[in-house]
Image 1 (tube, helix red, strand yellow):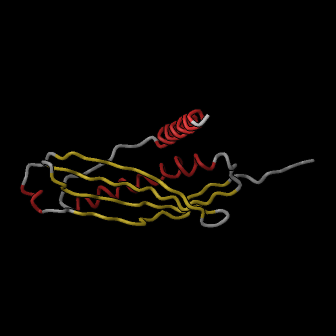
Image 2: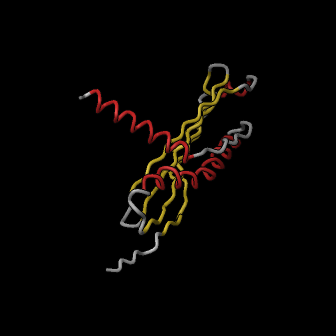
Image 3: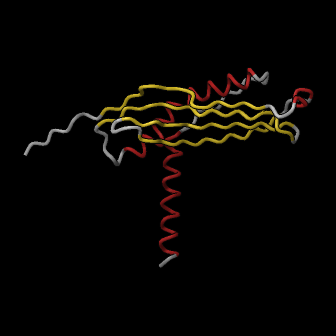
Length: 154
């Protein structure tokens, strides 16, 4: 019996900004010395569009506080449509949760920098992120919580 499996295919077919938001709550921020405290949040989600396509969305939110006041809040939902054909189901979570967001990140990073500088704030270049390590950490945490829940209910 000869089983010949089709070659796995993974391709980025489209990349786009799904949602962009920038807010400066008060102009007072421009009259004060600029010593910001940044808070950066990242998350990603994936949704199957059809049998071979997934939309992956990387959400990046940056809020800056300057002297206990919110200076700005910048947010982007950077999205991509990925073709995934003949991919092993066990590989799918890693691809959707780490590989695809790592492809989207440079675009989100550029968009955040653009809207922050257009808001007349200093350039903001986010540091690169190791999505594989973050994915592995989240997976380990979820498994640990699952084990604790199982032993707690025993």
